[in-house]
Length: 244
Image 1: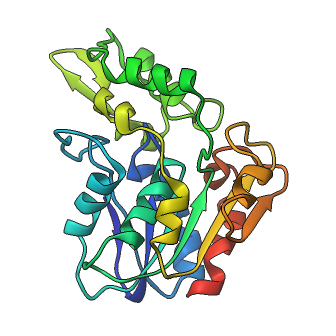
Image 2: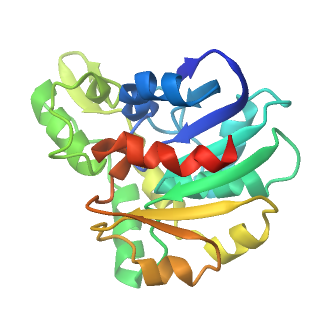
């Protein structure tokens, strides 16, 4: 977990499927110059250093996040992909730290039966072991969608890998792929705080039209893709300016 001290509100950064909280670490200088309060970037359950869950759901992932937070923290949540859904689930749950706003970046809004079947198949696979860190790093980058954006030797990649007796694996619990399709209309209707959904202009996983169907404000970031927070941190951080 990346945690920077300060006052409130707390900026809670939630990573996407397969990544870790360390994906936000390069943001530190930018946040410290642009955000007046504390910020947190935890590993979601089953990712990085966070223990797995017995069964994965968006509510269970949100519950694990909430358990690590101070109950009086006022949260502004910025979540990428899976993390954006977890942010909505956090805002929708009763009790716990109050959520002031949620910005969901690159949330996949529509899933085909084939895509859901593929996710279940991935969730059922055993852990894959690699003979070298380099091979494991390349797999981590593919799984997290970060290929071409981070080099295999980038420090943020280390958090996504585990080495045991000279063999390497991804830190992620494969069962996390079984989290399923988010019920976005229900999650959004269960929140009573501002919600902004955003996507990179070239994100192949979700369209503007799909997001606009959800009835909340939508922002499109020109020239960016699914991992817009890695491509252009400043443009993505600007999405939370209104909620400080």
